[in-house]
Image (cartoon, rainbow, N blue to C red):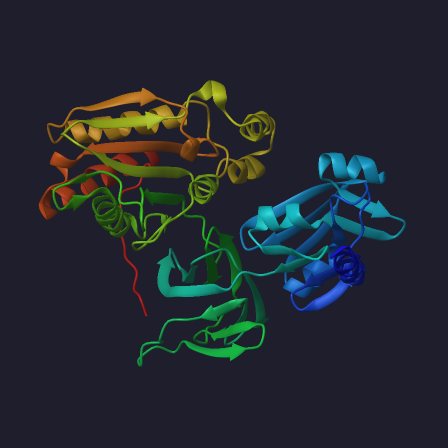
Length: 416
């Protein structure tokens, strides 16, 4: 028996030695190193980016790798022990290495360890829908996915894009000029021909393809609470996830054309809390809608004392910037008290319908990354029971947004 265990030990040792020092990335092989010993594996940064189609940038002492809207930023250390302790990138002579497991965590990549060899890959993604919309005089195609993906522009006109790692797509309507082509690395999508070169914008689980004049419409992000397996509060047959989605979809139609309106979800799917908070960071107005038993309406805003340091620095910079630069900054950095003013506008709008809306400050994570005015509106289910009641809530919220932003007109969008 002892001899058998000795043989097994030798064989396992040989197997481990065979894989040790290897790194497998998207079906390609490279080297893994362990700057601080044998606990944290590092892989070559540029090789990983190229093998998985990630965005890659080295700048000002940091290296950035991105997947859609997700960005992994690593400070660069020249000492291996320091790099491992802080999970920084490691520069060894002319090569730059990043911690593989930490990269997988931040970008939501597939990761496992096979006999000491780290394995890294994209998780398969699904294209859920393609929506066409107008933002002022600009045309947009909004690609919605079940996770963040990397999209590359392959041709300008007609637009042809590589959706890396996308293995499932919806059926294109017969009347649509949109088509797909399956490839070994994912899927190509072909969009209708236009007169202007396209621009790409990345949002959580979305990629927006825009062409036409650069729009300066304000961005409003609407967040329907819960979704997917998380139904939220239920009263009889009324479920919070359905009620909130119904209201924000109507609110989107009411504001379309006046603002660039983005939904964190446009169907019954789960959206991680982090993704919702990231949406808020790109909005001039962010409304997260929830429901609760009863008839009370409460509007929550994030305490100003807990403002992000980035927002504070933006406000400091805005105060001493020329007018043109200040106008750009103000699209992402709201003035102090903006959330409270939006909350008050919501309360005043509900008051016009005889509904009392209380305002309160609370440190809610979904509002914590907001650069603009962000509120969470909790509406009693008794105020949402009928289609007419839900339409009224959407109209009251639209009135509040218009009042806060000084908007007066409306428009619409279409789905191919």
